[in-house]
Each structure stands twice: as structure tokens, then as C-alpha cells.
Image (tube, rainbow, N blue to C red; front, top):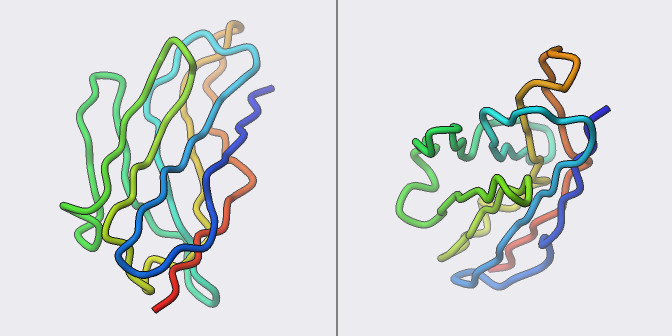
Length: 120
């Protein structure tokens, strides 16, 4: 009932920047937390950053000072600005959105993932 579409991944050289976007659609009454996770080959999916409805933010230590998360509730969108990218940032990045539907059921939805590859 909630669909997430991500965009903005790609190939970039170390030190470069990318901006990921994620748009939610469906029978959404309210969005609470919006976040980004990543999964490198052979590794578990890890939190990158989360932004709450009250716009408080959390970042993984490995991305602090380089990545910035933001949201636009009117557009039901979340963004991840990634600067000073490193080869170890290479992973599939997944958008995650949590909230409530119009029938008052809670939802916790994931995007399909977008590949980010950083070359050295």
C-alpha cells in the first residue's frame, strides 16, 4: 500500500558527491521516521541516517560530517546528500519510511535500492 521510489545512485570518483532521493506514495496518513540504510556485498544492512517527524537526525559514525539527510513532507520525500565519498561507501542504498495509513494501520516500507559505487 506504500510504494517508495529511489533515485540518484550511480558511479562517482572518491571525493565526489551524490544526492539520493526517495518519494513515497500510497494511502499515507502520516509519515514518522524516514531513513537511509545501506548494504555492501556480503554484509548486513546498516543504518546510514534517519530523520524523525520532528526533524531530529541520526547518523552512522562513518558518515558524520559528510552526509546530510533532509525531508520534504509536502512531497513525501527524503533526501541524502553524500559528500566526500569514499570507496567504502560503495553499497546498495535503501530508503525506509515508517508511518500510518488512512485506515490507521502502521506501515514500515522499503525501497528497491539504488546502487552507489565509489571508485578510488
